[in-house]
Length: 162
Image 1 (cartoon, rainbow, N blue to C red):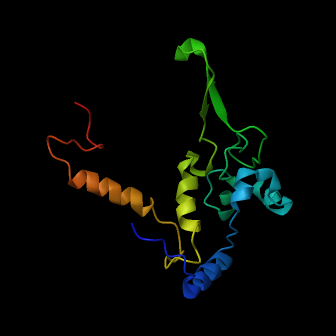
Image 2 (image 1 turned 180 degrees about the vertical axis):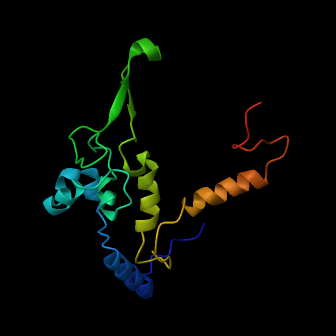
C-alpha cells in the first residue's frame, strides 16, 4: 500500500479558499462538531433562521449528534439524540441505545462522513470544491462494481430478495 501524499497543493488550496469565500462557506472544526457549544454565538444566531434541511453552508455546523429536534432554527442540546430499546423488546438485560441521525442535515448521519471526505484535505488535494454534486465517488464506484459483477449466482445488493 502506498503512502498518502500530504504535499500542499498551493494552487488547489488557493482555489478552494477563493470558492469558499465566494460562496460564504465557513468550515467548522472537528472540535466544534464534537462540542457544538463552542460554535461562535454569531453563527448560532444565524442558524436560528436556517432550516435543518436547507441547502445552506451554515448547516455544516449541524454535523453533530447534539442537534435539537427542530426542523427550523434548532441549535444544540447537551445529550445526543438517541432512542433506548427496552429489555422487553430486545430480550437482553442491558441498556441498548440507538443513535438517531434524523436531526442531521439531510436527515442522515452519513452527511458527516461525506463532508469529512470533502473537507479533510483541501490543501493537499488536487480536488476543486465548486458545488456538491451527488454521493461520494466511493459510494458510486462501489455500487457500479457490485452491479457489474453480479451474476445469477451472485445477486446484486440492489436486487429484490427472492
